[in-house]
Amino acid sequence: MFQAPCPTPSVPALPVAEDQHIDVDLDVTLRTPSILVVKARLELEPGTTGRRSMDLSLVIPRSQCQGERPLLTALLEATRAAVERATRNGNQYLKLGRPRRVLTLVAGRPHLIPLFDAA
Image (cartoon, rainbow, N blue to C red; front, side, top):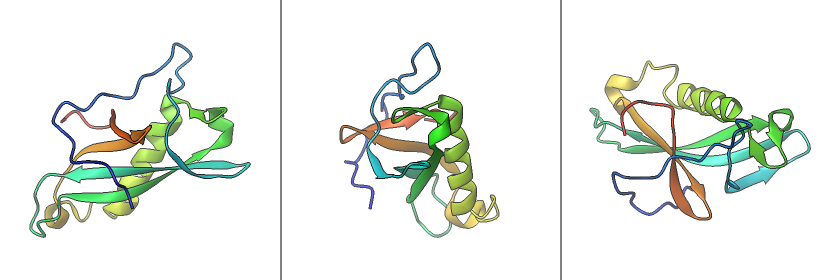
């Protein structure tokens, strides 16, 4: 389970290096020769269920990583895929609430994955 403290509105965005790789070590929950799995949390605008967040697993191909630092595009693609799975391709937005932002952990501290405009 994602154990981030209750984040404040000003959560820092993940830093990106000049080569477009994430410039910090993400808190990886599973490492294999072919993938990295990173936990994240999807925060939702209030919907009819009253649910405010959902845990996500971001599956990133190792071919899109430099060591354990994924390319920004690979992280965003993994995040989009996880959000689509969690919301059943957007069909549950009205019930669950619209996605607001996605957070992941770096050294135990929440950081924003820049997927949505709202933050």
